[in-house]
Length: 256
Figure (cartoon, rainbow, N blue to C red):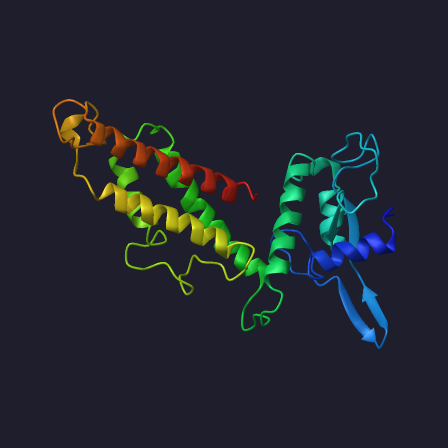
């Protein structure tokens, strides 16, 4: 039985827009049944358990607080509190769900309700595909930090990624990998904008295999035989662009 007061639970439901905060779930938690009365099927789950044998336990000054609560439907509550799944539904995961749900609910204020196919489970499939693309590019760029060298595949994926990971498309609201969920779409836009900027920087120089000893690695052609200040500044731009992408991609993949 939840130890949250009705006031705290209602604060959690309202913060989520009255839907389950679990990523990928769209179950309604509160609905009017008669004037002045509501049907409440939502549950307040503890992010950190007060029970020593409970999931996600650690010592807190108080457990039945808004900060330690997450609004879930009964099915999701039961699943996240399954101790056999404690490694899957960690404190960080639940806090990320809550943060995303609050952002999605707040960004939807004053805007029309999206209809005609908007479903969080469908959007989760889109987001999952986007995450997969990000993961592939992130792994390809991970070894390259100084801006002087990038793998040929990394250069190709930066170019494709700047178009939303589709060489025959352009990023926009109707792109098949762009979610309509306001909890994801702005962050996707920021990632693609980062890749567009990085691609524009890459295209300012020619890149060639002959400058490296590894066939699949390319290095940009310098202005001079020795490294000039201009070359160093260019490499720094590349390195910074890659670093920004890595941060944004990791945050998106990890659900933060």
